[in-house]
Image 1 (cartoon, one colour):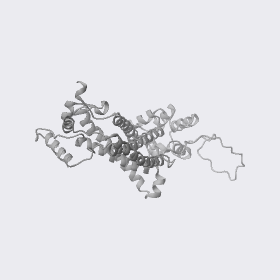
Image 2: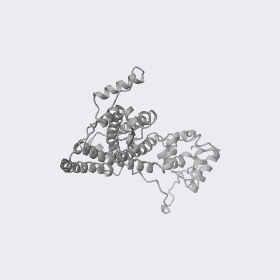
Image 3: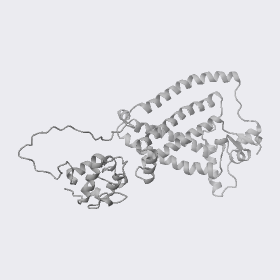
Length: 386
């Protein structure tokens, strides 16, 4: 259609904001949900693809930082349009939106012949915008409590930390479902609205979606910018105030991000070190020998393999974690294994998934070559418990 039949709805700043919000939200959703549902197979695969849990957490926090900066900018941009340019606050909901929502409800049921006529923003767009604002506030507050638990627990009772985790995860699921169901339907399925990508809507689209705004444009009643002198005066006042507001908000963002170092720091994995042990006389009477071999090799669960699994595998396959359903904290649970099958099959090392996974290498709790040999010999001997 010819250029004169298109209506400019969004400038490049609004479109850039949309891209930043869309990309940061997508990254936050993906990296957040794989942490909330960490034992799901798709989560395990995505975490491995992204480089492990630590990398996923870092990516999640970088995306959160980007969204916070976008929020600081958006406050200033909206303030500039409202105070300096005196753009009508058409995004504020009102009784007309309630009537429009009821009219659309009746229209969808076939009880009304035409859709309600709406202005620059429909009630659906207002609902989604304010849901984004509210969701960002909720995610920001709960994210701060989880990112800075020590600081938060000095101000609030410690019970707020697990409560924030539950609210953060629940709001994330709600936001993702809202985008997949509400946004995708109204913007992509019912009618593919390209205005946030091109900036323009065709006149026919305006007539269908925003007839009241189109009528104002046709009548020449659209908003006009103020005169240059008034514009300069308002700009001076606005930037003086917003510079202070932005400085306070950016200081809050910096405190949010760098207030503590506990959020992404974890205990480093154990390292094998050589310990000097001088020879000492054997005490008398000589202690009763254990089931450990002369070379220090454990031969039963109780004399060494339980401790070996706890130190190397406990963080991922303990009683409280049990990733993949595998719990190596007790002898019966180690034999039972997890979702993929039995962990230890006495007398059959080739069917023992614990040994198979260790033999493949590159495991987070990787055993040394000698320890893998001990594990094989122990299983071949029937994997005795004591």
